[in-house]
Length: 228
Image (cartoon, rainbow, N blue to C red):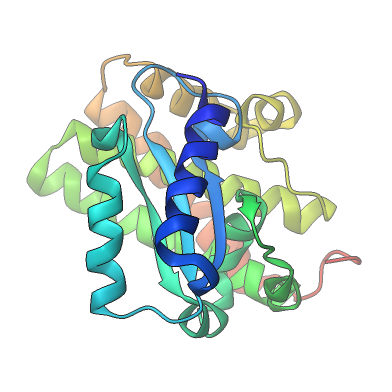
């Protein structure tokens, strides 16, 4: 699938239905990073100036007419909701979104060393909890794969906190990673490509990494990097 052709058609249909109601249309995920496979979802972002139930129902009607509808997912919101979103969630949202209509520059000032640090801390806490719960109860391969996927986004934030640069493409992030981060990224890529999960070993690796960063983020000072 040519994602540029698909997005052009998507924007055209959305403008025909919503016109000036739209604030932003963007593309995220593996298609946005140019790392998509045949199984990849199409992660679109749609932000309206206001969003209510009627807006969502009209959007559902547009989606029903689109090719590859079964792959379509992503983030939708009203502008006011987005501007009041927790800043800890906005780093990857801002840098991983390629705008096709509009701009996300209003969000830039919400991304600070404090919000990035808080997002990392919350991310590793959530990963650790999910990993332990899954190991003891669900024993689900899918849950563990999702944990590694989430870890990639946390490592992107760690890299940003250290360097002030956001490495969007996972393959380039892997080239620059070292130590535990490199191990996590390598394993995440293997699982993304369909390698079988090793429940005990994969859980232990992810738990140890998350535990380390839970401690580090709880003790390190704010504003580690100038330029954030």
